[in-house]
Length: 85
Image (tube, rainbow, N blue to C red; front, side):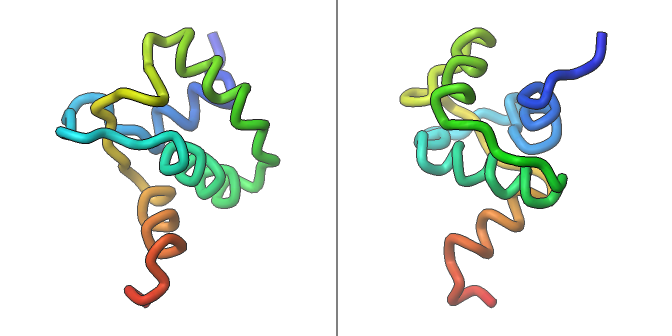
């Protein structure tokens, strides 16, 4: 079965295997997602669609222990904290 748009994002940019204490807030999740979309030359879908997909996978956008990984994580971090560049 081919991966969906959101499944590809989760596989490539979200680390579900190394839980963090705080996890990602909804704005961080969506920011990571938009960075992933930019790097993959794809149009971001509305945040509500992402929340629904995460919910269908048992992930709560408001309360989770997810981390970031991959190129989208680097892009998101650099875009979020321009003083790092």
